[in-house]
Length: 193
Image (cartoon, rainbow, N blue to C red; front, side, top):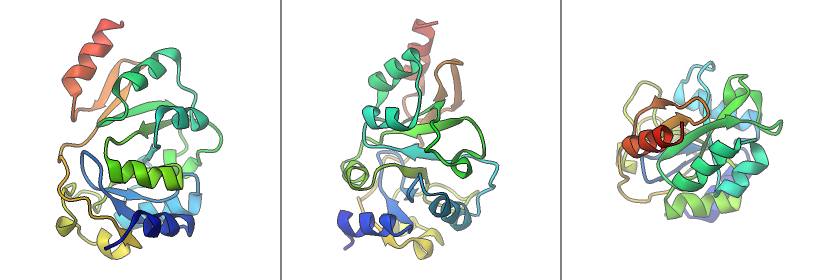
C-alpha cells in the first residue's frame, strides 16, 4: 500500500496523487508548480477557465500564499480545518494556471489526518475532486475512474464523507457552492453583516 512518503516523493517530482479528505477524494499536485497543475487539468479533462482550489495544512500556511482580509481570516479560523473552501486574494507565488488568471484562489484545509500529513510533507496541493470532469466525485478508491491510471500514487484512506466542500467568498457574503456545513456558514455570514 502507498505511503505518505511515496505520495510526497511523487509530488516533488511533479506527479499526481489521489488523497482522501473528509469530503471526497482529491487529486493533488504541487499547487505552486504550473506544469504540475497543468497535469491536473489534463487528467481531469477540466476546462482551463475553471479555477482549481489549493489545499494547505493550516490557516497560517494559507497566509503565506494569500492575503485574507480580517473578516476572511476570522472565518478561516472559525471553519478550518473543515469541509470549506474560502476564496481569498492570492499572492504572486500562486500560478495563473491554478486560478484561471484570476486574482483570487480557493483555499482548503482538509479535516483528514492523511491529507494533513501529506500537506505537512508537500506544502500546497491542488484541491480538486479525483474524478474526470462531469463525473461524480468519489468516496472510495474503488470508485476511481480513469484518474487512478493517471495518478502516480493513490492513498487509500477508506470511505470519505461524500459531500463536497462549501465554497464561500466571505467578503462578498456569497456561497458559490453549497456543500457540507452550508447552513452554519450562512449563519456566520449573516451574523457578521
